[in-house]
Image (cartoon, rainbow, N blue to C red; front, side, top):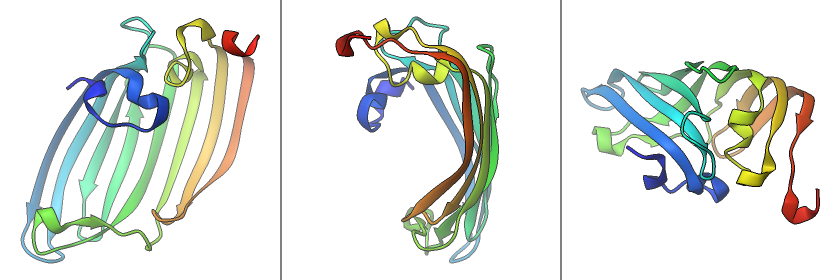
Length: 168
């Protein structure tokens, strides 16, 4: 499906690319959730950028009775590597439709990003921005879904971003 079919926040709603979702979930009653899934985003890029300038990544899901374990692995050719793992808490219900995020239980995860900044920066910049440079980030995700906390370190090397509307 095209990315612009999904109501994403802010400028992300004006992005291009394809998303595919394949989930095999089984539910045998309260607390009996199991299954796997893959969410794949292909050539995700800003609205003003050409086909092939975006990045591709896959999020693998492992459905468990009280949590969804996730693993992020980039399949990207734009010199951007993103990898991570974590777990998001859920509340089981009497059916698949009754499963909800648990906003108060702790979540955890780790995310690392290394490589070209352009694929990520094109998601939030206009066509005139011409982003360049390298990113290196290592982040820990914690807190709860209702009060998320991200800690870690992010560094840039030779980052460049033009914002003509602001006179840069």
